[in-house]
Amino acid sequence: MGLTATPSAADLSQCVHCGLCLQNCPTYLLTGYEAESPRGRIHLIQALNEGRVEANAAYRQHLELCLVCRNCESVCPSGVHFGRIMEAGRAQLYERASLSWRERLFRRVAFQEVLPYPMRLRALFGALLVYQRSGLRRLVQASRLLPGPLRDAESLLPDLPAPFLPRWEVYPAEGKLRYRVGLFTGCVMPLVYAPVHAATLRVLRHNGCEVHIPRQQVCCGALNVHAGEQEGARAMARQNLPAFLDRGLDAIVVNSAGCGATMKEYAELLDSSAAAEFGRLTVDVTEFLASIELQPFRRPVHRTVTLQESCHLVHAQQIKEAPRTLLSSIPGLKLRDMAHPDLCCGSAGLYMLTERGMSTQILDDKMRDISRTGALTIVTANPGCMMQLERGVRRAGLTAEVKHVVELVDEAYRPA
Image (cartoon, rainbow, N blue to C red; front, side, top):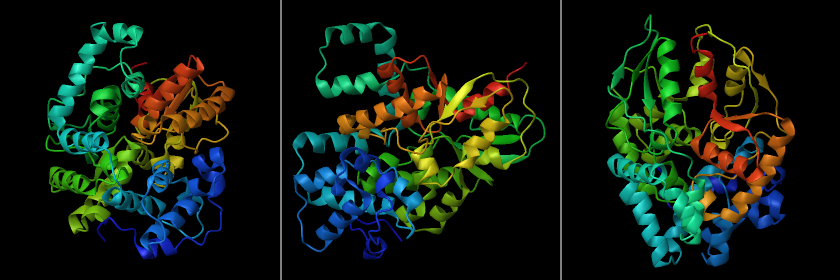
């Protein structure tokens, strides 16, 4: 079934409006409004399909305020595919809604002119790296010359490392060859969180993996899908399929939960056997490492950590135990759970920019949960979550640091 701009009647009819999703929906918990709940949004989308409401400003606000965290899917007794409904619902909305020229320009530049082109992204982040390291950033922040939206975007950007630029397409396994895997690098991850890719590569090779990093790969299309830009997502998916398939891979490893969720659902975008095979091969790095016999760790990692369960790992991919299994296997590491590790941190891709107010409220609640654990390291499995949590650490004045799960695994493999 290919993704269309009209939510299917079969998907919509699955919701029996029982309300079990309400207490697991971040926007409903904050507002108490039925229209900001999963069943409320499904009702609105169904009403638009039947011509009972219009795609006006109020309708648009209710759909855009959804994080698409898919927490509701984890608790739904009817198995409602809420993520699929929302993605098609937003595509339908943007076909009908009246967008300003600024919104149309932003969507065109972001989703059609930048994300699909790795060299353009690299040039953009290269300029940002110069901006940060030249001292210009401090000058701009002190002057407050940037308009509000740009100032918000700039404040989210962490200190950029040198980008992850692999020398080769194929890296040999260390020791005996056990697996042949592909490493999906994505669009933003190699530029903003390059150390996570470097750690992933080291851990995979140390555990007997021959690692393929195809140069033809591009953005996974997740941001496009969430924003209702389906054609752009399909085009990127079509580029990624031949980049990884026919290499004899045992798995396509991805360390971004949002990317992995979309890649596993490529068959819904393209409706082809190749897309289905790509989805079958795709595994999150925590999922892969927890499924194999790991080489013995070399040193203890004396850290007290708390785990923020990335929404698109725990809810979209239904992977809850793998990160915990890895963390519990690391000697010296202590895991202290927060009250609600599976509730969204408010990142949700571009949501932390487009819905700044709601995103910040959700983040502040999350940071209160985190601070009560006393943990000095916050671990997660998605770059958007890392960026949002780093912002939360700054806002809350905490001394904690944010790490990807695989970075702690890599730390335990360092020479004693």
